[in-house]
Length: 287
Image 1 (cartoon, rainbow, N blue to C red):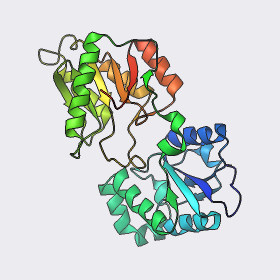
Image 2 (cartoon, rainbow, N blue to C red; image 1 turned 120 degrees about the horizontal axis):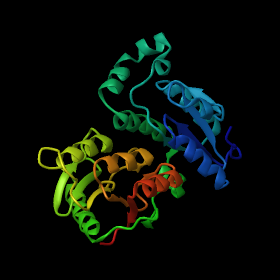
Image 3 (cartoon, rainbow, N blue to C red; image 1 turned 135 degrees about the vertical axis):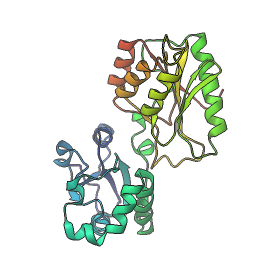
Image 4 (cartoon, rainbow, N blue to C red; image 1 turned 30 degrees about the vertical axis):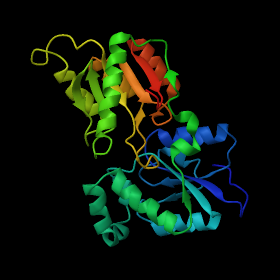
């Protein structure tokens, strides 16, 4: 269970969704000595983390969530983890599911963004503040410079420059946060399918002829948030799985926006990159 802040002073509240991120955020807050409470989302939050939570609520039971926040408040809320593709447990209450059938259709037809924007809007309308993971647990973000032991060579650096230019040019548009580049050749741009599936496309397009042969030298995955992006809702992230998929796609390494990209388990991510011979580097705002 998280440690509650003193009454009346405001409470930091972690809203824990699915995946490893909520656990990493909770651990980061504890390391930093930041008192917090935790609300687990039934059907999403993993069992070990649910045991540390102060309360468990249904995904669509915003009234219960707001009641907890009001009793601890004014609260500062940190949402962490996925809430896409609800499990049966997330909508177990048949009556609640019927009453919220329109909202459920929105969840099924949309994604994390639509659901989280609506929920966080209600939280703010009720007098609470919303922080992103990048603000509450900045130690989880990619730092500037190399993460592992492998260094980027000249070909890779040229690819990084191209990738950054592409992402900067695409930033005003509603496209993804990543691009796979080999030199001045763009192999794939991330769309709604996400980074992993984009890398699968890059794997085919980066080998020739017709998907055979070696990948283009200096192929790099470049990842960064869009300009003006609400990082509280959509923070770019990589982890050991991203490293493995990038390796399978023929990438020499990854270049990530420092301070704007979450690294899921930095030690494990760097170790996997070293094992597979990929570099991981964080780049700043300056060219």
